[in-house]
Amino acid sequence: MAEANNNLLRIRLVTPDRILVAGTAGAVELPTRCGYIEVLPGHAPLLSELGEGEVKLHGGETNGQRYFVARGFVEVLPERVTILAETALLPQQIDAAEAQQQLTEGEALWEKAGDEAEKFDAASDVIREAEAKLESAVSKI
Image (tube, rainbow, N blue to C red; front, side):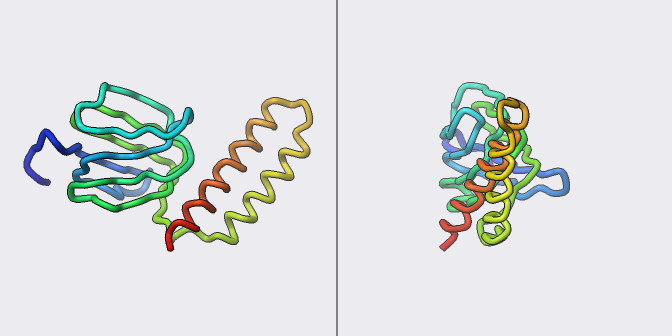
């Protein structure tokens, strides 16, 4: 790995079966359950649940890399960002037709949820993930 640099973050993006990224970046944009955040070197420590959407890496060894992620956690330290994702895909790995089918299924679940909050939340999660996949797939061009 590159020599320590105060202007760069050490980045790791890990799924249960592999390490997708192990390098440096000057900034990281990533989705949390509460919305997108941007992390720069020196960021205050943070532990958050990962949302659905794109991780975008700027500067350093990983400049320009993008990954769709869903479900997991992110740990931010002043010099390091560790993203533990259940799902992580390059935009070109996303099957848009499959994501559209997931969206349709999520909408059907949402219609059936009625007043049951747990079912409504589960359907909303499916819809949110499908929409984020479709957005990432479209942006790969």
